[in-house]
Image 1 (tube, rainbow, N blue to C red):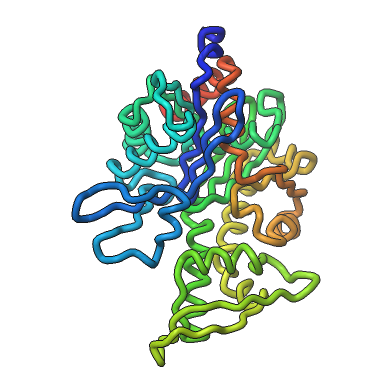
Image 2 (image 1 turned 30 degrees about the vertical axis):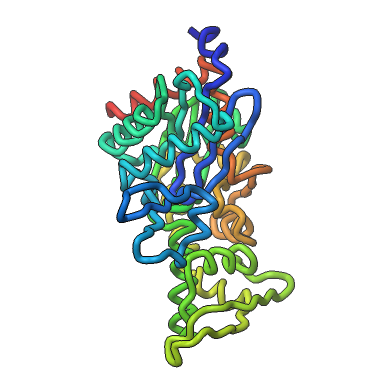
Length: 346
């Protein structure tokens, strides 16, 4: 079976994320990295754009066009749109050519329900996948970050995505502890929008808030001050306006979101068995996902927990790289799935 699995060059690994979807093709690496957004014509019900093109439309669409995020908090919220998006990305991964239905490995949060898992599977099958394997994204992120999960010893992974922050303690292929927090990148973007609205009476959009967070956002004080011009609509005068904001202001806006994630990590450390938590002193915490790129987040987490914190070379791609490795190692996929089935039964 392992040999048969390895013969299919069209097999794909997918990180189906709330903010971004990444697709890995065996032998070619990451071939798709696009926002999980679909623009739909509400009159004709036709897809106008998907991915980067759809994201460019956020906040700019006419009344008949809706820019939709088919995933919310790590789960499918709009079944039909998710199917269209998956089908588009699978076709894109194959350069627009027809293909034999690919075998697909998809990373999903360990905390999603059986109903949500079934929705992911059904969307993939309806997008013409021949076989679908679901693996826990936290385990996939660990594998993608080159953590030796099959060896004795425990590892903690904190995956800060778009919709959720998934925290897991992994030992011998399985998850010892897991928790999913609905505070992540999107919540941070909304916090920036609310802060600028309340403090400066300026209304900005999601795309602007995200770029501000990426450019000057931070979890702790920076060595040098950063500033950025922000354009939006003055809520008092009702006209376009430009203001200049600092990294200190955005750090203040992100305080509650960052504090909630740190608190959840501390709870995980407290609830982990003593023998397991002892490994963290040496192995530390691995921080992955787009949220890992927030300036100073790793330093703050290390200070608050007393544990060393590392960020993989490409934290955004950790999950898809991990699922990609399973395409060439069916034994690893089988072991991870076996552990997953036991945890689901429990």
